Image (cartoon, rainbow, N blue to C red; front, side):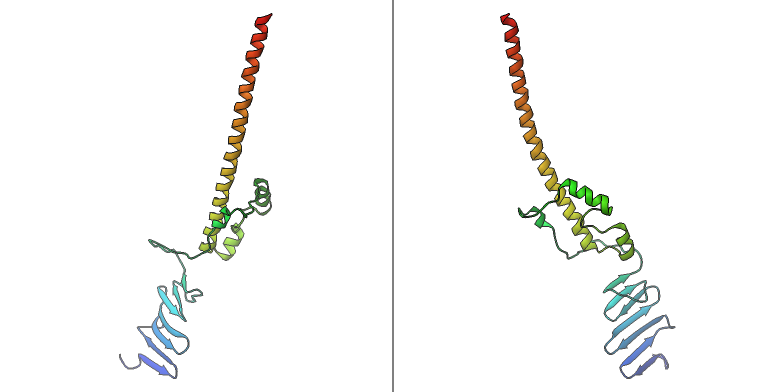
Length: 171
């Protein structure tokens, strides 16, 4: 290192590369900061890419691309347990009419203001998908019962038509 490029005062040390926008700083209790303006900033255990003030463990200002992202979150298999109280379709429609979004999914306004927690969003959407699976199953059961009733009524109707034909022939 050239003279003047390294400084150390107490529990603080800093190395700068070129100018104020490119440096590595070590500070007791605060960790290490690696700073390259508009590129990457590691600060206090948080990593920032494209941001000067990373708030989260990984804070990216811009678009990310990944081959895979794993999100640890709750899951919705409780929907299939016998004790689960499924809303009626009428109750769901009242909810949607009142709030303008599906149950267990944030509203557009909330997403715009707060952002979307990917784990919560996936869980809410999956819960709705699983509930719709139950609605479909219930509808199929009702349709099957109605089809059996319809078939029985058709058979009875055809039997009555034959009896009417027999009565016509007796005259």
